[in-house]
Length: 359
Image (cartoon, rainbow, N blue to C red; front, side, top):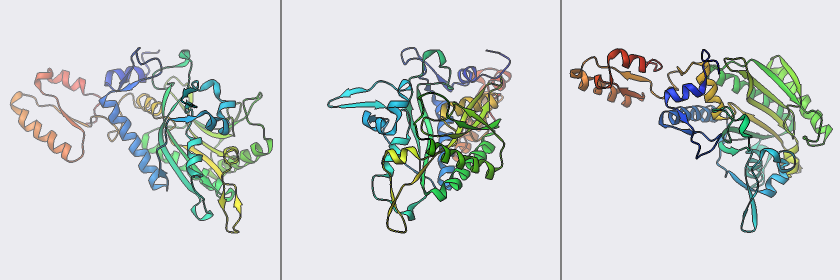
């Protein structure tokens, strides 16, 4: 670790945002009160952005029967990253490695009409991946993940527009959060049996994503071997202060899972038609997003996201009551405020302790 560069692990400890414990296990950080404020504020920002964009939020369980992931293809193509199935009575249940199978079931919970499409379903939900201990670190590689995920069920004619709007939504969020995208990547399949075998569907999805990128007008690079097992994707790449690149946000067009789950909608002609599934994540995992924000801002988070937005520092104890009244009024106005009086140290020491607080 280069001590001169911002590191979210060090900043997280200094700011009291999150920590780990050997009894919880590697890759399983817990959020402290100030960290919970940051996380909650970020999650509410995402939910509100999604609501304005026409998404409806759902909750789904973090467990599913093994059969669910056999249908989705995760069991065959992604099992090495999943936790083993657990026997519960007559069922085998699995901690989910993604949210898309659950959202497919929500879609097919009743008959759908073309008039309902595009149907935009979003969730901030937990998922679990059996990462090897050697690659775990801070908030960037964890085993319990809070994912900002959404799936748009739409007609083929709507797919490009929905994927394009998802990329624009990501760009707006990056502007609000102070995140810089270093490049866009069109992630394609590579060699080997990791991917579902249907060349025609891969070609169709790839062509549509290229159309999306052309309409948005961003430059991109193609990368073989980086696709999801069920289809190509657009990855929005970020970099940490050391220049290490990672994926934060994704947009995918998926023909595979609608077929596997036998999803339909009734068209204007009264016949059944297969929807397209657009996968979309604005900030990826909450954990990785917070890690990046801490490093990008060197711990001095934007005022609206900071766990404490205002610290009142009375010079003398005689000013305590007046300072406390200011703090109370700040809370009533919706600000997260604290009082740091002389009992907590000299004025200089208190100023240094509050150096990352906006006001």
